Image: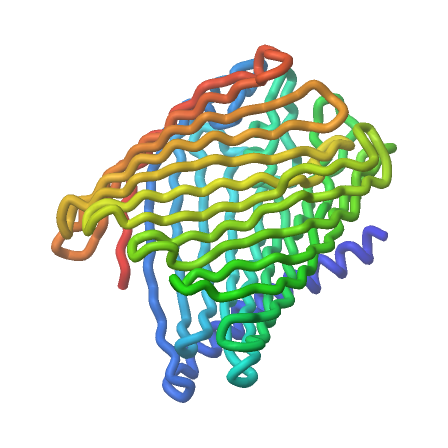
Length: 409
């Protein structure tokens, strides 16, 4: 089994870097296919007062300077197709166990088969090259502590969305959609107490929508979605919260007003689970809202709200994940801009009395020099709270101060 896993991993790495090579080949042949390339880079230096997002135990309130280098290449093959590659290299000067690399490979394309039939496709593949061992939180920690550490470990992720649209008339359309969210966690498996054995998991679904175009340029739709969430089994687990789900979706999207862009989707989500703990059948609300309001030439407001069910990356549990964010961007002039954002996130688990909440406030400013270099300073304040048990260590505070410089070539 180990040999097969090794071969599979090698093949997957080969496929990933073959994709990078293909993108580079397209760039080299840009003169013949009329592709264009965009190159930019960002260098940032941060000070984090709570790297592991806990105030208890040996990892509590550990500080570190963090350097991040982020170059990005984007190949615009034509008006409808773009290939991108982005590297993130992180150095934690006072917590070297968290050093890691992140490789992002993306593809976005759209087109038409005929005047009535069109398609869209986007995929992003992420490889994280980091430590193989998970952390050991010797005292209390929250779900957000675990998630933050997990994202720095060896893993593969994929996010893919596709849809096929058939315009029945000037006002009516049918649309078939599909999406995949996939995590392949490659950290070492151990039986050590308080060690996180992260598991592979994915969420795959398909939907069929019937919609109509509204007079003001908006479009509304109603749809049925069927999906499956898979939770791997690892580290001696005896439970499995894999589940099938069904959703009745209502959606509204488009230019709601001259200055307001809206994308809303919501509906009941019925989940049928394989095993406990927690109910074997439950119905919860699912929803996504993305809104952008151009208040004036200099001011823009953004709202992003989401709520969904998923299976945990550790333990036997499923959870409800919610996020509420509001942001304001102000451009004083061509060189200077400001930004403020507030966000509330929560994770509540089935079968246990745990509800972790995260309150985040962000503020920043950017200034663009005549050379084109953009300098920025950002501050983030985080408050982690346990709304149920109030266990010491599950609650924590943290601050991150970041200076950065970016340039587009």
